[in-house]
Image (cartoon, rainbow, N blue to C red):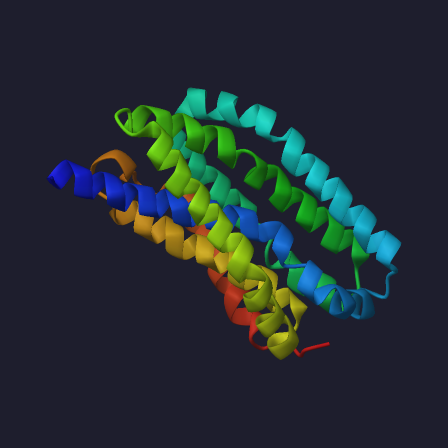
Length: 217
């Protein structure tokens, strides 16, 4: 019974990671008109930037399995989460200088690290939930779907209330919360946070704090 409860807690944590992973590409759509006005770009230009990021997100998955095999699945998931949050404060710069290139490069960087998640998480689930792999995969998928459902509304509220960069930075600040939970999990999902990961968490925290002082476009 205790083992079952621990597995359920671990699965909840993985579902949250899956939700945050899918949220990346659901921030721009509800804020499209705000972004276009702020950056001074056309639908084609911002669509092209999003397409490139989506291609990176798809192709990068090919490298996810290699990373998971080399350093271990949980450590790889933590690194992906931390690194995808590293450039979040740059969205504040893009919002203040009307920089399409800054926005596109930041989105692409985030997409690359986020792209590694799925093969790593699936590999971990197949090993950690041997007696209920299909069930675990299903609940893990539900976690991702929740991110798809909730992110547009949350992004719209934050973006229209505090400026569009705050939606991106707040999403990455959620990675900070997830990494903090990961640090506290016992057994299978427990791992120390390295100095570089602490630095990346600090970057998330600083960017999150700055976002609330930005003026909405």
